[in-house]
Image (tube, rainbow, N blue to C red; front, top):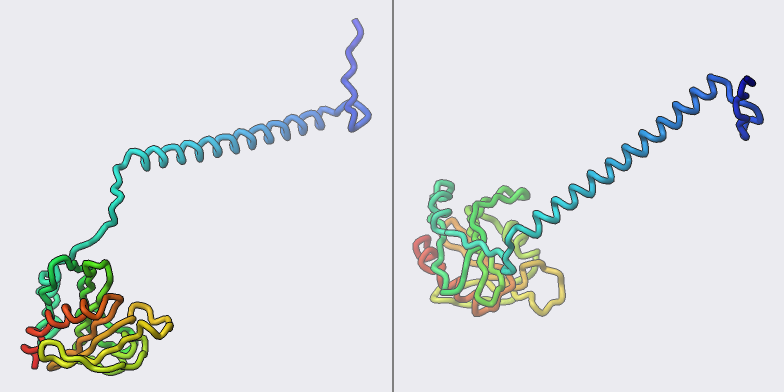
Length: 213
């Protein structure tokens, strides 16, 4: 019986040597494993995305925005240790809510301030700062270095007014501001609310200001 000759490899123009055959098979095996690895990665990624999608679909969600309502009085009671002056806890009108309350220390000048952030019924913002042994640099930085535009008296307390609403300048949250001093505290109100809403918050601070004077 005639011995079958090894097939001629077109690229070589001759039959493969045993070494070439072994190398070709090893390369084909490597390519197969690489394709399998890539396929497995794609399948794993697809499975992960499917799990995330299922979680998103089954977790209940509310369309309403999340509004925090901070107990300013409770936070002030804990923070009072930082000041000999009483920390202000204004009794705000119905419909107002606080979304923040904390002690803040300025990195620029080291001034510590008691801060409470309020959202008004019109969904506007007023930040109340009570600077402890503050200075004019601290006040200026809060109000974006804008200039005073006048004064106003609210329930017997005189406030300096910073009305930046019509300037067209980028003043951040300092669109409108009020400042006054009492004892060792400097009060700064700033935000986007209406002057009437600022007046309401300033009026709520009068008992604290009178206690400090």
